[in-house]
Length: 143
Picture (cartoon, one colour):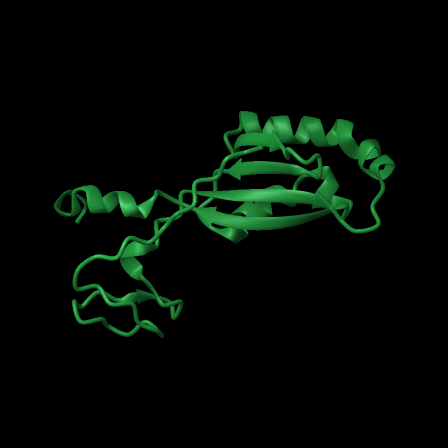
C-alpha cells in the first residue's frame, strides 16, 4: 500500500474562510470559490496519476500492450517526466508521480503511453504540492 499524506488546513488567527474569492478580514484572498484560503493551496510541483483498467477491458488486452508500455514508461522515467511509479497494493492498476505543474501537462505526458493510446485505461489526476500546514511552524519565514 502506498501511504499518502493527507493535507489538513490549519486555521490561523485572522484568516477567515470565504466563498467566491472574496477578501477575508485579514485581507487574504480565498482560492477560487472553494472556500479554502489561498494560503492553504500549495504551488503545484507534481501530479499523481492513478491508472486503472477501463470497465470491460480484460487482462489479456492489457498484457498484449505491456511490453511496449514498459519501454515507453521507462523512457519517460529516464527523461525525468515520471519521477516514481508503483503498482497499486490491491493489484488494480498503477500510480505515477509525474513531473508536471498542471493536470493538462500530466495528461499530455500520460497520453503518449501505449495503454492510453489504445484507450484501455482510466486516469485520475491529482495535482499536489508542499504540505502547507508546515508554514504554521514559522509563519514569518515563509512570506
